[in-house]
Length: 254
Image (cartoon, rainbow, N blue to C red; front, side, top):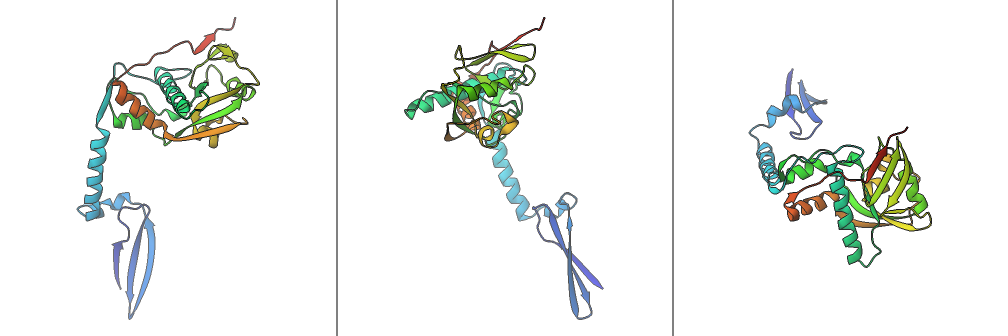
């Protein structure tokens, strides 16, 4: 019996290996599946490997381009952090400017999620790769309109421990529970319509349950990536700074 093995697909996983058996005057074919890793050496020095290497070198060069500087490490943590404050303020500024350019009502506030911020911005050079590591997902900015009564639902499910990032809002907690919620310095009006700059993942996919059960009056899509806003922000500012403020106030229980 003579058996010949050869690799069917070199760079795709899973990899299928085909066997050809010669039995007398007949060929019998069979195949089985193997993990790519143990057989990756079969792709070495191949045209496919060369193509992959060329793409990786281009990618690495692009990711290494320096676009700005952080004077101190910008960390992300709950209930608020320098980085999450920076991102919510940045999105608010962008979304409100976009709304005005489209002759639409102003944006009232921004609500994002901590789960979408995947890391810190280290002190020193900020590269394109840094931005991709912080905002890894292809989330798009949307502007969601809702009544104040619906917005209250969102904030009332936040706690001091499990807060989410927001801008142009201030929440005071007594212990772990919100006791005062202000938007642009005023209590939420249950009948007023509020325009919230946020992410498509949170609105359309109920990401992190932030808008779970909330009824929207309208959702304005921008088709602009959250990550691209940060990229352009850093390129424009060059030196990026952020800090904590009073948007989250926690009063101890007596």
